Image (cartoon, rainbow, N blue to C red; front, side, top):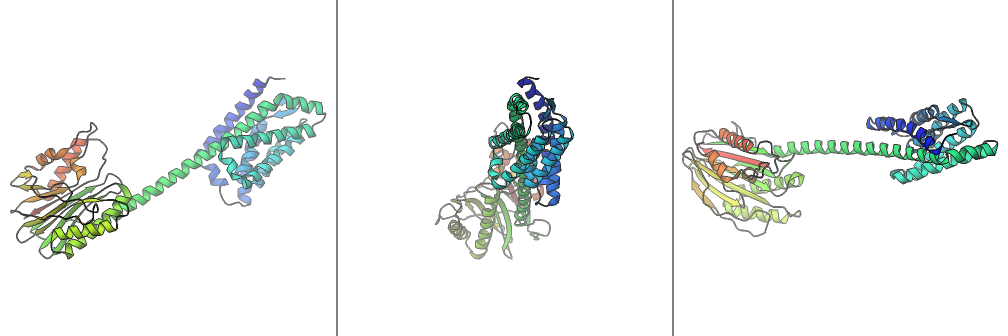
Amino acid sequence: MGSTYEFFTRLAGTLAVILLVSVYAGSTQIIKRYLGKEEDWKSILLGGCFGGFFGIYGNLSGFDLNGAVISVRDIGPMLAGFIGGPFSGIVAGAIAGVHRLTMGGVTAVACVVATSLIGLFCGIISMTHKGVLKRFYRVFLVGACMEVMHLSVVLVLVKPFSLAADIVRQVAVPFVTVNALGIASMMWIIRFFEKQQAESLEKEKLKSELEMASVIQHSFLPTIDDRYPGRPEVAVSASMQAAKEVGGDFYDAFYVDRDRIAFIIGDVSGKGVPAALFMVSSKMVLQSCIRDIPNLADAFATANNVLCEKNEADMFVTVWGGVLDLRSGELTCVSAGHNPPVFIHDGMAKFPEYKNGFLLAGMEGSKYHETKFNLAEGDAVFIYTDGLNEATTKGNELYGNDRLLECLSGCGGDTVQEIVDKVKKSVDDFVKDAEQFDDITMLCFKWK
């Protein structure tokens, strides 16, 4: 005879091994791979064998009490029934029960009947009340009821009744508690790993979609190289580094007519896919308006009104746009709440004086102002988004306008590509390994 504590200890030891196997099976997706398919005879058989394996191990690791084998065998049929349905539960119960029958003892027949019924009932519950399996305490209660039924079968079938009653009296509390706790823990482990797998798959899907979105977004940006703009009077270079897979910054360079080329840079409020979608809309509207409307200020005003009408998401965009006459070097520019450009003349970098306007898509009817500059041969214009001058170190120190001017000073003899690369390196050296919180976009053009 043993104490209740000893019974708990023996059953808990076996249960610990079963839970370790469950963790492995759940983490390697064995259960889902073989038992999560559409119900056919193969999945039913696999489910039954899987549960039967646990049942046999429970038999072998159990202990004898007056001719009865006390074990955690019922966890196998319960698991098979919950996952594979009633037929899997019956198969698992039969496998574990027949194995128990070969071990003999006064409770052998009763255990065969009880174990098979437990597999059947758990399978029926999984089909008719799936919500039960979503809560730990509910599975615990079902498991406890199954074990109470098991003990009831022992009381009915085992003779003499006094022997059955004595066995039940000694093991009832640890037997019911450990088996119910075991099946509840196993189902929690399985659900945990299924949830982890589902979240992982969702993240991979989202990552793939964002990568595709990034490719599509960059396809909307002009490819600037030796072939484009393709005029000896002007040289252009640009760079965009999004803080996320997709961003809200954009730049553009396109011909208004044969001798005039437009340069645009913009920064949409927000980040991610919504900003990227609004970026595409803003870029297309601006390009259309600048090409169709001769006055640049009017083109900005029209673009603003169009974007306000379609702005259900209440987003906005800051934009700087300039049209360069390749014959004379005259630059006509308009700013809608954007950072000031940097003019580089004779190796000196400075911010020009001009009137800034209200951002686009913020308020319908906004007016904008043109400012004209005459570029000399070799003059360069550097435009950028605020992710550059607001780049921050881990100590929250901003890159700032002064560092930008210092970096650009002395670049008069550099190519536009060298200028862009120099600024990128300067920012990277400043922030070091600090996280990038905003998109960094820049464009430099030089009238030659």
